Image 1 (cartoon, rainbow, N blue to C red):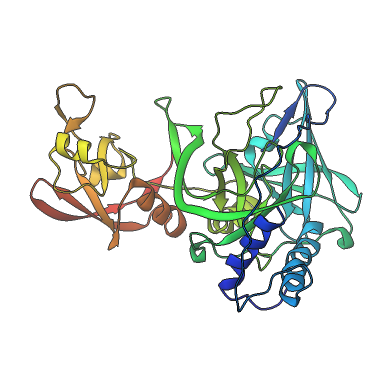
Image 2: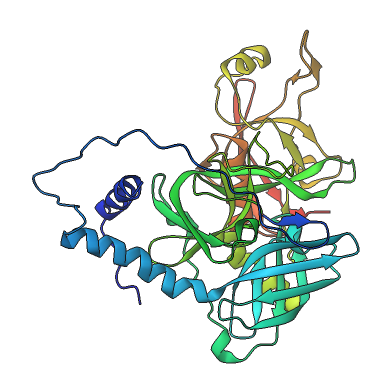
Length: 393
């Protein structure tokens, strides 16, 4: 079992040793192994020396670092499962992890979307069919349930994604390209990222999913729904997607060092509601915003600062509309942007540097019916407006 949290320097040492040691996977019909390509020989790594740190293969420090990673895998991997999805179009695989002793398993919505049957394969070799409990398209989460003997159920411990630090070491365990039980390691690259939700608005656009963790941990098709973990073996995120321009010979996306995971704090709010009610209700403000401001957009819009969430649209009849928030209405030359909109600079006293900051705060801390104070800049005026949040339609 893993013990107390390790000092910060372990993170750097682990990454150094790793260097020295030099999503749902769709298919049509039977699953076939992904092609294996040879890797060019890397350039020699310069010798790293330190009078106070011996990390040679024979050192005690080296052995301790190795055992920390292997201990983590041995503790966590029994709770990570492979999910085989079949429907009329074929089959595919994804990942998931055990949430509780009732047999609930957390995965991504896009892993189970359209499934006729769901088979869950445990590392021990035990297999069981699963039923769908509920889904959340806004965060791309789903909960399924299996009937399994207690000895097969190893719930993973949930961490606190708010405590994650940029540069902190994290690992992913899942089934990339159907390779069950694969462990990869990287760092937290950024926090508070946004992606499109999987649920459309009435206007045909997509809601925004917020509070995503960006990581360079290797995530590939088949990792979707699996856990992103800190070095204490706690789940800090659910691996969701990668951003890439590369594809395999079969057209599957290749890892490019930019992966995204749903923060575990969102999961901790969503999962109990899905189990109890089959759904989770998100707070709703009713605005669209530029994801971030550049100096050029600040100048074009005539804004007093280049940080904040500039409102480009307010949904008629929404909580934002009722509270008096304004979108830009004055057309500008050579741009689709319109001037005159409010610039949100804080929510409940918390600074808003980009739109994702506001979204993360509301998703993690508020629900329908809650009241928030939105601080805006409107021309030369700074105003505080109270908004009673609604429910995402």
